[in-house]
Amino acid sequence: MAKTISKQAIFGEYKNPEDKVTAALLQVLHYGGHRIVCSVFDDIDLPSNDINVTPQVTEDGSRPDGVVFCDCNYKIYIECKIVRNALNTQHGKDQLDANKKLSSPNNAQWVVYITPDDTIPNELENVPEIIWTNWQTVVERLKGYETTDNLVNFLIEQFCLFVDHLVFQKRGTVSATGVSISDAEADKNQRVIIVGGHWGEEVALNYDFYACQNHRYFLPAKYMAFYHKNRIQNLFEIIGEPEDDVVLTPALVGPDYLTIKEPNYTGAPCKFFKLRHVQIFNPVIENDTKDKNGKNCAFTYNQRYTTYDAIMKAKKTSEL
Image 1: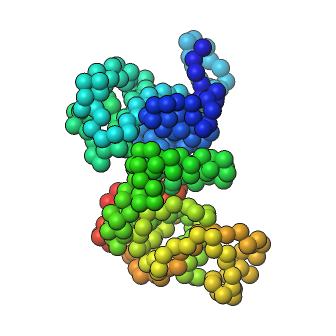
Image 2: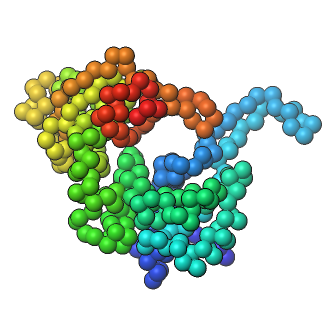
Image 3: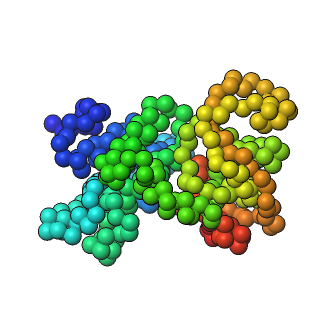
């Protein structure tokens, strides 16, 4: 009988460190479902999970009045490495040769290698049938994933901590993306966080702050912009450091905010950014993002990053 991840203890039953971190990742994907799989494996053109409804279909000589179907049918084979240059061994090369045979994108079947390397390993550079990513990217995407499911949030938090300890072998000196804190801080003055939502921009323009889910992860950044209505129009400077566990009070957000914007606020703590408006883009930066079918789609629902230089020059979101 084939093993299923739901039958494995969530705290791990493996001795091999690579097996441990793989099992931990699979637990997160199992409980998060298709949406979190799409977020983690953003480089793969996965089939849609939407329901397709078509009237008057003719198939195999039959003409039913309609058909409802979902084309979400795919396989992702995951190969995890926790040491750098792991593919530069005979075992790694033999394993790669075997894994190539599993890749069949035309049949919605992919092989993904996850390694701690900063750049794609030489062994994978000329192997288009294999998709490569690193643990830094996986953790960053998970930290940027938004859900109201407390179990999934807890699993993500624990998984990222596990990767920090097991893969990067550092405690407290590595950011949640696996990037050293010193490197992340060095890029801070150029980095722009782009978050989705009309509400956030309206609050930022009128009340000079942004509040979101408590302990939500962001890379260090000096600027913030908001995407909605298919455009980016305003740029804000982040004043000071964002804070977690903040309770909104009239002294902090102004005497009118809670009365006008959140009259039913219960005092739940949040992550808080103090902002200052610094730029209005005229014309606006228009969204030209396309999905896998060439149709218009949102630039972001959660968060993305760009640089100050890029956003100051951009006319389209594809330039960010």
